[in-house]
Length: 188
Image (cartoon, rainbow, N blue to C red):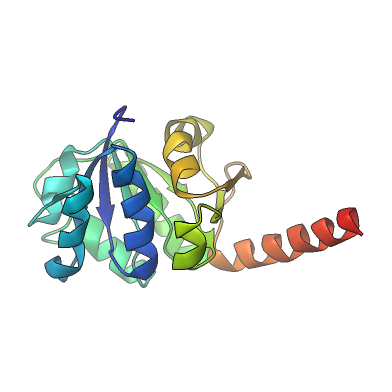
């Protein structure tokens, strides 16, 4: 699967496991992490470890999986961010657990640069990801979702598109509770 050039920012337990799934199936993947040594093992699966965030501007799609909305803003728009040298991806997929307000601010700023955003919070942990059972709920433009779907399907088993409304990890938790309740009702 080498349809698009992918970038990945954030290699913690979750980010590593998600990026590894993409690299293992042959995606053209470049990765960046604040602590480079955490990203280097992904090279074993074919990922390219880059030194500068701006190197990811040449990617079609950039995933973010970091700690906060402020981190996402700095990594994308900061002085040394992805778009600091004038390049830009076509799509940013943010799986960071951030507020609706932060997500809306990031989406609006990306739009001024002609970049689409898909909010794609996840439910699971590294073991769930490795087992291929991660749940992802995505919101954003339909075209962005269509572009991202093959990669989201690679990372997780349960990918749901909920339309263009803003979505946060908190909304995902509520969706997951309803979904789990529905499963219990159907099963039981």
